[in-house]
Amino acid sequence: MLLLRILSSLCFVLPAVPFLACSGESSQDQRPAVSPRPNIILMMADDLGWGDVGYNGNELIQTPSIDKLARNGIRFNRFYAAAPVCSPTRFSCLTGRHPQRAGIFSANVGHLPGEELSLPELLKAEGYITGHFGKWHLGTLTTEEVDANRGRPGDSSHYSPPWEHGFDVCFSTESKVPTWDPMVTPSADAGDIGDRTPGEPFGTAFWKSPGRKVTRNLEGDVSRIIVDRVVPFIEAAADREEPFLAVIWFHTPHLPTLTGEEFRVLYSEQSVDIQHFYGAISAMDQQVGRLHDLLKARGLEQNTIWFFTSDNGPEGATQTARTQGSTKGLRGRKRSLYEGGIRVPGFLHWPSGISAPRAMDVPVSTSDYFPTILDVLQVTAANSVMPIDGASLLPYINAGQETRNRPIPFEFKDQLALVDNRFKLYSSDGGRSFELYDIVEDPGETNDIVTENPRVVEQMKTRLMDWQASCKASRDGADY
Image (cartoon, rainbow, N blue to C red):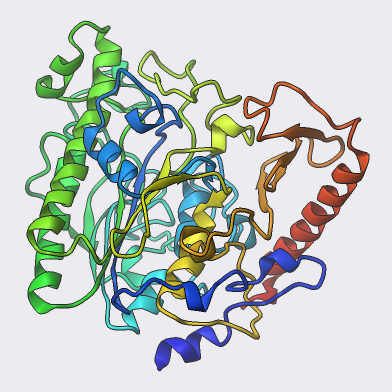
């Protein structure tokens, strides 16, 4: 099988960093009795905070569709984006690897290298039809014209579109767009319009293939515009009885944030800015429900693995009056490695693969998608030079395992962090000094216990430094 041959070079165990093994936490005899080729949806909101959904306790923002899926699946109480900003987290979803390994240090930095083995490439070898819909942010999409943040005529330095990484169908933007009428620059009240002129083109296109932009059906709510393309993709796969991978990366509620009257009216008692922010989230939720209805109507729901999360915590409240996202008391926001910047909503909806709906306290990361899906497909990877930072979730989902065997590492600019089942080590200065928190008892990170736990600190520092060295080796070319 082609996928097995490809994966024979995929998973390497560093002697000093044993938690980088790929499928070592799998439990073959606990694998659910489901189709060997389930459909897969990887859905991500943009800047959605931990407290911005009803199932996490928000009593104002209406997210009934998201809440229903979460409550009938596995709700991850400690779900972490791989980074506190968008581009790096997206890399982790498609590769199972931390973005530090590829030099994707922040938004608009680096791109998805062609040498990486991406999830859509691997699934195509297994007969999947693959599609990307929404925000890409892992490279530019054109070298022919000015487009979005980095696309420029003649500049191929970061050209890395989704169709060159295994996606058959694309409806993709390089980066952000307004959440209502995405091709048109809104008023400055919506936030983050730069030097664009309200009413003029926003300067970002939806691309479907090299040199081919989409020009129709681009008015109104951007989540609806995206799902208008997802629906026929899923319908076509169902008609052909082919398994599909749909990567759906919404722009909502990233700035510029605004919505239409039909969603603003849901929050008529709130300020105008809150109406737009909450309304944009509810508009996205409506499209989540639309996809759920489609899966049920086509008999696909039971055999579809559906992950939902956000790429990072909510935007800082000082950016604009429309950055109303909630961390529900967690410390920090977007760009911070404190919990509020990286702990985000996360759930798995998979009726035929989950024994019972429930909440799970094991720490989980976006890097876990890749090894989990390979584990579901009953592919075992070994003897590799390609370190994988994620871990399969199957032992937690159905085998009763309640602790994670390897910690989750983070690095963003001068910040470092390492999260295990109980503790979190954090540094704001590149590792010159550290803080330690009992994240189970103190999720708000209010009580630094570093002086009381020197042995824990030293052990976690060693793991973190070894992981940093491994990432540097990856960037220096050891993996390719």
